[in-house]
Image (cartoon, rainbow, N blue to C red):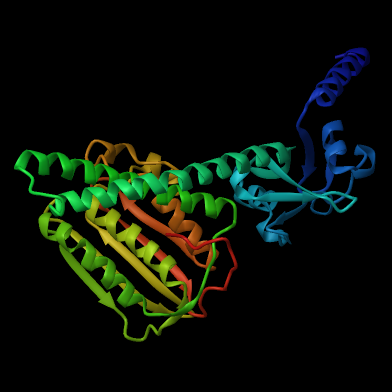
Length: 375
């Protein structure tokens, strides 16, 4: 290739990079900038020539919830050490600080560059998602408002249905009772959906309160199991309980703890075929309490496991077996657990069952002011 052809190719590459709306940065294996396009320079308020040769960790300083991420937690480090493409989106709450001190939310993708099996650098694509955040917040606020408005008429329907089923306004024949029971059950499902939507909106807006008091986790779990007793009996499910007496009362929000147990245990019962088993263990593990919920149910397909904690998701293999379900429960549980400084994960094999694990600090949940608690 002649020098003129090389110059033409370089000019074409420069034109492509300059026309990109996303910021693009290329780094070497020492995390030094070797290339930055015009969009990246504008977003970071840094001239590309000035950035060349600098440590990317000083230029693309990353923050989550107002705190700067340590090097080991940076998406750049994860991509290069794990040799995987890393994507960070709207729900990851990642922000970048620019020269003037302003923080702006970003979505980014990092692809490591491999040369003969060794990481020689990485390509970083990123964009400002401030508008996306505003739109997402507006949608969340709309869902919250709509859900609040729906609660009043649904509560009225529930109340009048109960009165009529109890024959407080006169006797009913069998057909009338059947129709009213169907109406009552459908309304109950709508109330559960509205409550779940309200919980999700409060989580997404960061507006839910946490009111810690000394809480006996075993007592809360037993309360949930008592409510599920009719379903356990109907499906002939064997229940295994394992409570560690060394677990003390923990300073936690009892309502939030109940939400965790109610979602995990009701899912275990709901998605286990008749004659199966459900297990619950509460143990002390170091400085944490470990909660383990096990079932011998349908399991989660491998292809669906990465989406299980996302909003409105239900795995394909249970939709035709169990019609009820909002797809919001595990999203809410994960948010509650992480707000409390804990962790949630699972093991599952399709057709063999699922085990969910949760660790929460024995030190308890930090108090948090908010508009209202979760329901």
